[in-house]
Amino acid sequence: MALVLFASFAFLARPGETQEIDSTPYGLPFVEGIEPKTVCGPENDLQDVELYDGSLGVTRDYVAENEGSTVQFQWKPERAIRRELPGYTPGTIGGRRWCTGTLISDRMVLTAGHCFETQRGGASGWTTPYFRERDGEHRIVYASDQQLARLQLVHFGYQLSPETHVARVARSFSIERVVERVYTERGIDFALVELAPDADGKYPGAFVRPAALASRPAVAGEKLAIIQHPQGQPKKVGVGTAGAPGEPFIFYDDIDTLGASSGAGVRDEHGDILGVHIRGGCETSANSAVSIIAIEGASNVL
Image (tube, rainbow, N blue to C red; front, side, top):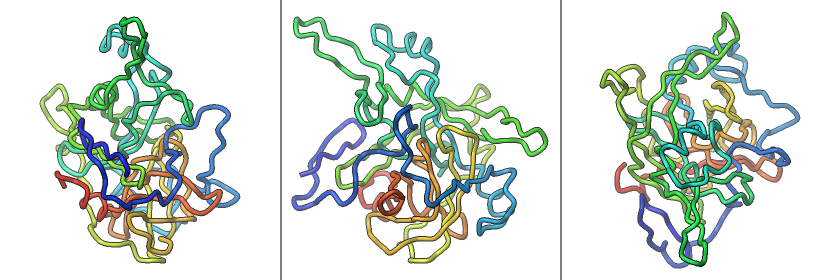
């Protein structure tokens, strides 16, 4: 049986469910010594959204109309982590640009569940905040997913200006709470987070048009686009086609991603979200997303 994390609770998946793809979350930023297996082909052909030349298979207007709802998650600086979690060792994530997500309502962002998973310095190479209990055993206790979420900021518009080729100043929001999080061994991997209002009491939906969800299967050969923050870089776009159907996953072996692309929306030709990118695998097969159909089937919110 697979353990499913739902918000702050746990329950068991149905008997007989099995792991279908590599569970290592190669969607977090790569640390030194980890080689990307997420670039499909000899070269990374991702393009900056405002510098996009229209050559990848969608129009420049498509990118301009849909990129605004794509966001970046970034950890607060180490000093802020120490202030907000007194007594904790801050780990190694302070200030790191972490994951990608998509605004789907005026204040709700859809991303990957493993973006709020405890990191213990294993395969990912990162360590999230923890403290040692003074109970004689010195047991290590890690910060919860709710605590981890509130240690991150969500940036809108972190992308290169075509005039200066310098990153624009992003509009940033704090995270109020994790509304729902599911991260299973079977590969159902998503989180919904609610953003706090800005200093003027406004939510991001006042500035950005949220993306719509497409609750349908991906069709083999249909055009897909992923607007993302690969390896924490300014926002970029990659375009390709859907592979053979494989619910609960969508596969694509011609769209490049990197670490920190996790949580990016996989969009159809209308810009609607068909799935959430969760994993790289082009070295052996294909990169993959969990479908909106699977997410809605596991969600008590959507």
